[in-house]
Picture 1: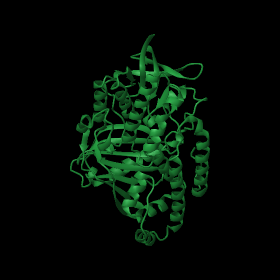
Picture 2: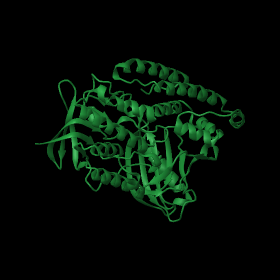
Picture 3: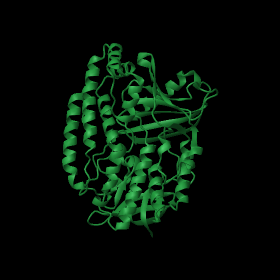
Length: 456
């Protein structure tokens, strides 16, 4: 068995892992990314390919390294199809938006991280996490090209994706690390890359379509006017093949896909939950999907993963330089994530909770009655407000759904309260227990108001 020693070892060559490792390498530390795929397949990840906020990505990997993967920068809004109401909503999307070739993007972030000095070990399957008797993580055990290898490091960064194996292997009992994680908090996603014979009319839009279950939705994202990312997401407690058939049936019924050719198929799991309460433990940080850093209403995770990687990388540099990789010294990573997007994502998750307790037809009817710009605010910001005139207009259009609206309004009030609570996220692990107790009390009122089963 070989033993490799590094300052930091990163599990996974996704967005979060590459941004974390590049940030660390730029400061002169020795860092390796271990990736289970081979060099050719690395970066080939199931994704909707929509990228929001690329104008403000971290500088560890310069934006000009990514831009060749941007295949459609002309998208500027969402197109929400509601067949139950025979309605199409045009919803503006704030900020810079693009559709990308995710595999090409994956190759480019890997190349940029390598140029920064990151070492890559492909064909490496992690088997175990190494910890001291006191619980500090000190490395990983793996097989590289079939041969056993031990990675020893001051710090391990887990970018291994949803339901990470590392978190099953590590003992976090004496830490604040969030272990309140189960399959029902995750979504399965499946997508196909489809070449259509003629340009689609909606190549400037991200198309969403509700299924007949609130737990599932379809998407059509135009990489170009003739290359479409067609996919669906559904909660893991749903029957997968029934919903995959819903996508295939919809593809057959859309005239623009007649004569189309499927060029790639891929599936994955992604979080549809709030970010982990704490993503640090002694010698260990989790980033990206492995820490729930995904917008739970849209499934968008690239931007959050990039910034999580930046924040983790910067804190890793400080901790290794200090010779102190304790929870306390890693904690600022948690606070930066929560301040930037984590609190907002937790607020958005409240609407996922609500959707599990609302009849899908009532929900679609209500959405059809709301102004598109306000839906955009709710989807991306976690909160919204309406003038009296807009409220009156929506009230008239939504006659028949007023009971649902009342429930929605009460839930929104609690979601805003939850957002405020995340604004006081603790500055040290010592204050975590009290903060969590108050947050859980708000969640109890959310479950009571919505009638939903407890999610956490």
